[in-house]
Length: 111
Image (cartoon, rainbow, N blue to C red; front, side):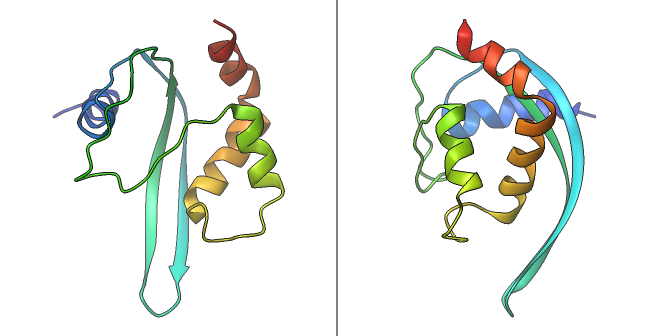
């Protein structure tokens, strides 16, 4: 059976064309209802890592993306007006990352 870290590294390469050493941060569970279209109820494992290679997006997996600094992302999420800009699980995940693991994120950007 493939470990969660190995699966995460595999998907990182399949979706973004990059590889790096990953550090496990935490797991969380969430439930989000999407009007009458359905719902998600998932257990998510959160990892961080740093890669200096160029991103090569797999358009079969990712519709759109952009790079931004952690500070810019925090400002966007803390001032969130457009609830459709980020998925509900990502807002929950980032809020906890910024609250509990900010120093680890900032240490990656300082290298």
